View 1 (cartoon, rainbow, N blue to C red):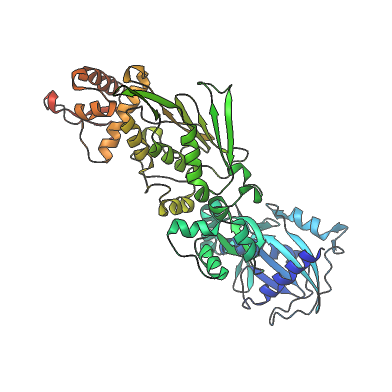
View 2 (view 1 turned 45 degrees about the vertical axis):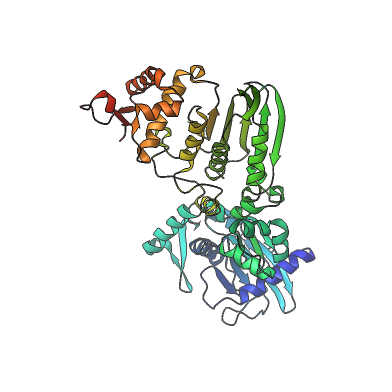
Length: 487
C-alpha cells in the first residue's frame, strides 16, 4: 500500500470512528468473521447504504463496536477460506447481483484494522444466498419482513439522479478549487466571493456540486464537474460530455472546414460556445439604400435555446457520444444522446421533462436556460423574427436532433417546412393566448397582404394533414381562428 493510500484509509477510519454507536451503513467488529455473517453484513450494509444515499458502506474489523476504539484484529482476509475456496471468491459467488466489495488491510499505531468497502445497491437489493437483508436498529433483518423499508429502497433506486453521483472522489478543498471554476459561480449568481475557501466549499456543498466524503475529503459530483469544470478531461468518464462544433462547406458532411471541441463546464463555457457558433454561422447579404450589407442567417436567441436544450436533455448514461452542433451553409443541426421524452408534435404544450432536472434548475436560475417549458417557444420566436422555418425536431431510440433552416424567401421553403411552421406557430399562439388568425400567420411567414392567398393555401394544407382545425366552424371566414388538433 502506498503512503498516499495508507493516509487515506487512516483518515477514513478516524472519520468512521466518530460516527454514532448505531449507524445503518457502518458496522464495527473485532474478530468475529464467520463467512456467513460477513455475507449477511455485505447484503445488509449495501442495501442500508443505498437507503441513506451513500456511495459506500463499511464493515471494520479491529474497532470495538461500543467505544469505537481501535483494538486491532486477528482477521486476515487473504488467509481466510471456506472449505478449500478463498473467502473473498466464495462471497462473490454468494451475492446477487455481484458487487465489487474489497478488503483493505491497514496497519495503525494501535493494531491492524481491516476495512471492508461495500458498494451500495444501485438497481436492485443486494442478496446473500438469495436472501436480501436490511439494517433495523443494530440488527440485520430479512428485507421481505419490512415492506415499508423495501418500498423505500426500490424508490431510492428510481430517484437517484446521475447528477449527484461522483465524478471524482477523495479530493481536498484546495483541489476542489483547482478543478472547478468557483469564481464563475459567484459571477453567474451575482454574489460576492467568500473571503475563505471554507465559505466556497460550504456554498458548493449546498448546491450539490461537491459532497463531503466519509474520510473528510470531498467528491466532485457529475453536476459540479459538468457545470464548472475548468477542463472536463480531468474527470474520468466525462470527456464525452464535451461540446463539439463542426462547420461544413456546403450542405453535406464530406467537407468539414472547422472542428472544435469545448472542454469547459457548461455554465462556465456557455457564452464562449454560443459566440463561437455565431462566428461560424453563414452570412447572407442584403442591399438597402444602394449599400450591400451582410447579416447572420440565424438568430442568436434560437441558437442559445438550442444549445441549452442540448445540455439539459441529454442522456448522461450514454457513452461515446458528444453533444454535437453541426453548421452547414443553410442549416444548423444539434444532436444529443437520448431520445426526446415527449411527443415531437406536443413539444410546445407538454409539461417539460428534463433528464437532468437539478442541472436544468441551476441553468435556469442563472438565466442560461429559460423557465420551464419556454425553451422551444423562444427558439420559435427567434425563427419567427427572421421569417424562416420553425425548428424541426427528430428523435430516435438513442438520439434527439434539432434543426434550424434558412431560406431567402418563402418560395424556397419545402411544403413540409410550410406545414410544420404553420402548425408550430398555431401551437405557439394557443399556449400564449394569441389568436392564430390568417393575419397572424401571414406575419409569421413574412407574406404581404396582397399575397394572402399563399398563406390560405398553407393553412388549408395544414388542416388537411390534421395538424390544426378551425376554432369555430360557424363563424365567417374573415374571423377564422385556428387551434392545434389536440386543443
